[in-house]
Image (tube, rainbow over all chains, first blue to last red; front, top):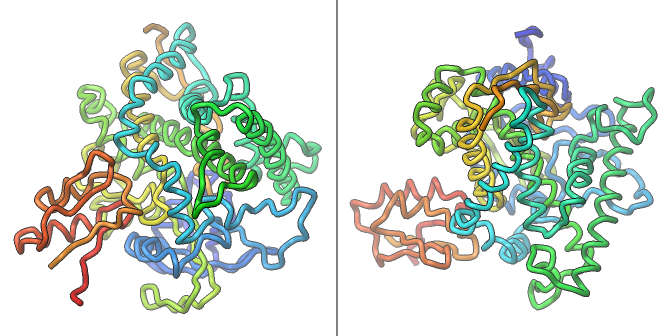
Length: 427
Length: 65
């Protein structure tokens, strides 16, 4: 592994996206789990510091107490010490405005508007449809022997599914992909296309890119919303238009934030789960062979892919009272950051935790979180991963990496931007 | 001992039914319900497992009044 293992705690900085971009964060997490499982990281520049939780039980402890550890002051480690003056677009943080940044009791009430569409039963009913989309995507690469797996395959399935549920026209799907990259990949120079080349890579370039993505997203969904107010369709946006919480209809702003969350969460994380899953299978040929010989192992293999790759890297919370975690006092107002790739390789929970084992049992990982904010789309993610790998291996059994993957420069999303693959064209 | 499912939180993952089939039943409306009044001693450990595994952490023992 390139890059020396840190020797002392003061060399570890979990605000630095570099180890994540290089795929080397696990070395840091293993060190922290064994030396400082509740680790204080001072915030760089204008950012607030945070306690970093790397053990499974500690993340369950925090997740089970959504009133003690709140989400409404921001769910990433990036919290500003001194709030910047609101720009042209008002408050773009979304804090307190989306399911993911909302606390009880309103969180549950809002979530209940849509959650019947995401239960295991509702998801299972979508399997044939999802297989159809997958087949179409794989048809699109079948006449060649290589492609960028991210751009042409893994991004396309979740994008089609969530855009379909929201009732967006196919011509708008590429825009949704582009804007998702701008918002969630704002810190990555590749997506900073609105900024002059010589300025890319700076904090300002990241802020600018995120703001541009945000503005374009809101203007797009604003138009979609107006259309459905006049002419409701059978889709999620129309459903939200007709919904009430505590007897009050949702406001336009609330619906727009809902759309913003659905499109981001719906297409970014599953894309990365599929891409990272393929990388992991290619890097573990014995497990891959076992799976390809017996595709009935797929559901269990999907769980192991989720545990091993943990596509969402962290979520942060803020303590509302003094609490002790593993003997460490967390004071009211201090922030904690939960690192999912770490807890999913916690040696106390998962024997031989660094090993990729497609029949690992039990495998009760936290890739989707747990409790109040458990991933609403978990069922879709699981189904999309399973169907994609079933169809992929059926049609292109020899598909392999054709060069290194390019990772996203982010501490929040375990993103894979590009993944060159080669395969025998057929199917 | 009595156990309770918070219907507002339950999203029908069915982990509880799998862990303790004699205690929980997933209804057709994708909400889990408790089908016994008192949890039999033999099922207590299974219910503990269901409580731990519930993705929404929607299950809890009812504290005696």
